[in-house]
Image 1 (cartoon, rainbow, N blue to C red):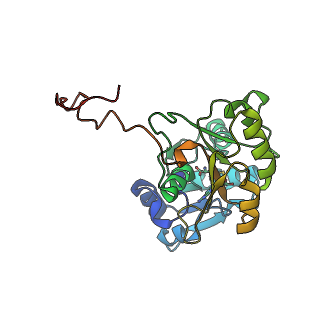
Image 2 (cartoon, protein in one colour):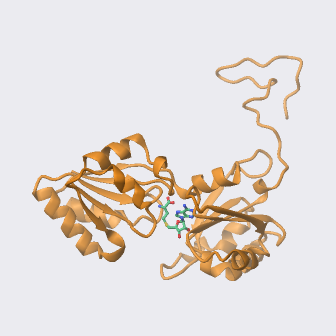
Length: 257
Ligand code: SAH
């Protein structure tokens, strides 16, 4: 059995209890060395063999997995954040399936959640935005034209943009071309939840200048949207005038609507 484990966004205590248990029991750990905090490996057994996948190809990773499985070893593939986002796990799962090897996925805290915590932000504020678009600029990995930043920006929802710190001038252009005003609040969150975390608040227009001033070139998320401003409508869920499955409304107070 191979387990894909989400390592969380950085801080070593932001892995799940289940993920930590898998790490402690592993005979082999293959971790994404470019982004996973190496301190997480302190949990491993003394005789555990560790591989850094940053220096490996898919074929090499699979070879370690298949050999480990054949030898009856417990193999953990440790991915940054949650493996469902830009994790390249599908190709690993498909290859394991072909080999008849079973696997399991243990979720993790994605960096977009770590960034929200660093910003003290709620991405879904009533009256402002009720959706979050998670996307990226096209790089060496292309993005389908129908998913352009420009197209998403037309909705003016909250956007969290991965893997794009080196393309901020183009990102600002795309966001404004799509309809987001240039003075819309934005933020660059560098290494969310790591000790060296940096939170830089700016606007869409000043994204590139802000990153340059702060010396940020990678390992950052760009958050965009009016949820980073102060205004919103209070929630209905906790409104005294609103009846829910668990609580009856009191008559004296008016509902938002
Ligand atoms: N699966 C991961 C994302 C992997 S893609 C997740 O769920 O978070 C790698 C990109 O994620 C980086 O280029 C950066 O844009 C973002 N990223 C990962 N960890 C980060 C962190 N701690 N702070 C800010 N951005 C981070």
